[in-house]
Length: 303
Image (tube, rainbow, N blue to C red; front, side, top):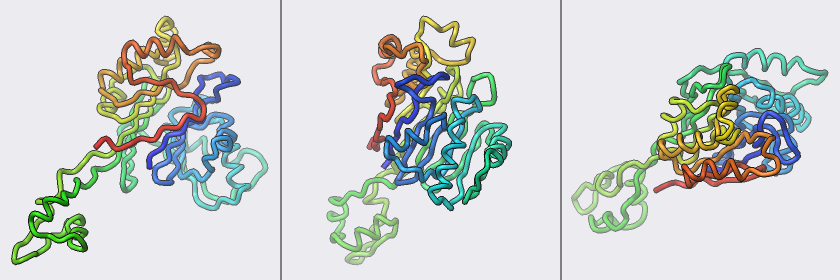
């Protein structure tokens, strides 16, 4: 399972219909939170995702991307959490975590570990990697790439039977990569197992101008979650504030040949209607959607 839940899809100013940035990735029960704007803990309650977060990844330290952390960790503590919590982010992460721990009169029942990351770092998480990507937002900021390691190729049952291997335990041995002997002949795994298959890839830009680093890492991604704050008619304002227009994000997605693009960090100026954002992006890249609160996506394997 690889599920993405959008908990906060708004821009700098929250609206009645959009909370500040927060996205939950659930991979086989491991919960990772991407940014944590104010109100995230309530959004998690409404979405019934649970709060057993393994790690939080902050893209940058503008308030709408991290002010939800104090309330979230206090709720975790009140609920009896004892497992450590890892918080990752760019420069200043360590100082921020220190301030959080000192903030208010409460005692945490678990450790919080701060991890300051730089561009191009790779975290090996067993079955998958997380890679940091420098973005263009005017302050230290990072995007994150989640990509799974290659999977074993498909087992060709028919070919195995043709080679005289009976269904049963010998099939399992071949699938584990072990050769088997049958009727005086050794059957190698490579004879019945296809080429390794690519895992899934998700890219999250955080707030940014369209940039080469995100474009490069997005090539072939199953899902690109990108800043789509403004309509194309406000490109000058996007340039000044270091955000992207929906059309710019769509062009990046098109050139990177991503499978699906989700635009988020929607400006409060589009509270009445997001039609112009969708129109600007759709005309460039058909595989686009605008994020909505509590929207869930299951990311399938492509082969």
